[in-house]
Length: 257
Image (tube, rainbow, N blue to C red; front, side, top):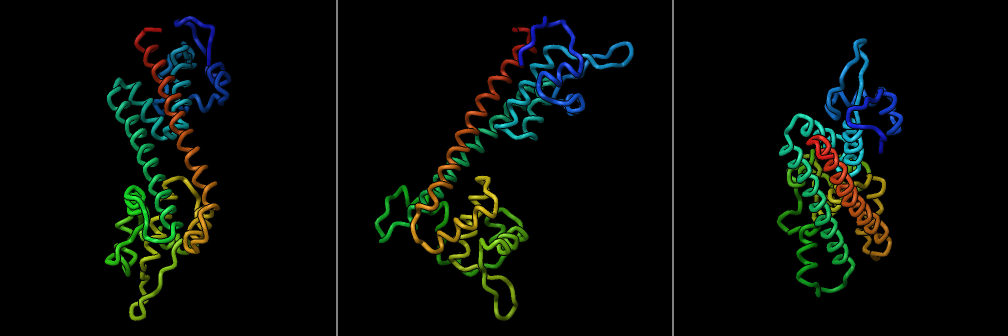
């Protein structure tokens, strides 16, 4: 948001709020959270802001789409505390997560291609991707909920939730009544886990899992994968936009603008 003000001019909370489409309470909350530098106070205790605060708010709002609210808050707090190295580390983590998510998508695509390809002829690349995404070795069949949850890095309760949603269909041990996840169940759990990481709700994952089970073709999955790719690209662009606004704020803090 551009302001026709000199660096020493003052902004009321309502000015800063209206300039960014926010409420004055939101502006105060952002200051208290460390997203904005501390405001000066008038003799009567009223907050006064400057164009630097507007730059900070620009940066924060630009960071949120790519990093999420929590990380964007942590980045701004670190910058305002002078801990820029910590801010850059948090930004690096978001970029690393995006790269990991891209690799996850590639693994899912490879696995689904392999599922839809008849016969044993698969390329080495597709085989490696399928292994990362959904291939289950014979030794991994027949495991209980605890070991499978640990392997996926989730809680057993999550697997039970997925079962209620129809994403996995474990059998029951006839003696103990415990859930037993066979080879296909482990495959479905791994694919569900990857799609959840891609941001998909359970209601949208269930048809994907069902399509994989039926192996009736991959065409119904193309829209899901295309949407996932588009959202990753949007996140990448959002990270760039956030970086540009943060750089502008850093320059303003250093007195270079």
